[in-house]
Amino acid sequence: MSEQENFRQKPDAIQAVLNRKSIRKYTGAHISDEDLHTILEAAVSGPTCANRRDWQFLVVRDRDTLNRMADANGMPATPLRTADVGILILGDLDRAFPPAKDYWIIDGAIAGQNISIVAEGLGIGCVWLGTYPQMDRVERQKELFHLPENVIPHSILALGIPAEEGREKPPFEEDRFHFETY
Image (cartoon, rainbow, N blue to C red; front, side, top):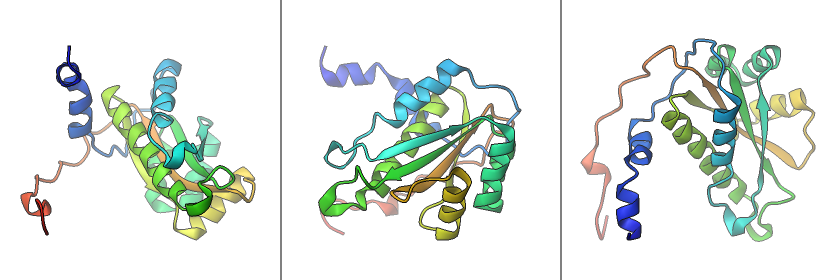
């Protein structure tokens, strides 16, 4: 079987990407440990600059801590208040690619996208909550978790069993694509 035929037999992956929506309200039901492990495996399965794997992840289920994370990130982080899990993606500057350390930002974004897609595929709601480069949020998360100087908060993914459908996806905009030249 060719690689393309094998890919075509896995429409669930394509559907997870195409159907992904930001879910901001959750039922309060528990995400299984098995599903959480799958999500965490996805987080570390994406590419990183020079394979430096310059991220770390802080996984939070404690309700009080989720609420304090929401407080630290401000009003847009309200979904953490009903989420079952919050995953704080962290950049580890000690592991970053020395000639271009800022690739940790892209590597963290890839990890977050993988989390979002796999959560969708598992029927788990997820929303990405920006932290970096809003330095007030970065500093409050660093303080909350007593992070070392070399570890920078990137973003938070709030996860839970969906209590909403999410917003309608915007239409496909063909004028956003350019072929061969701008």
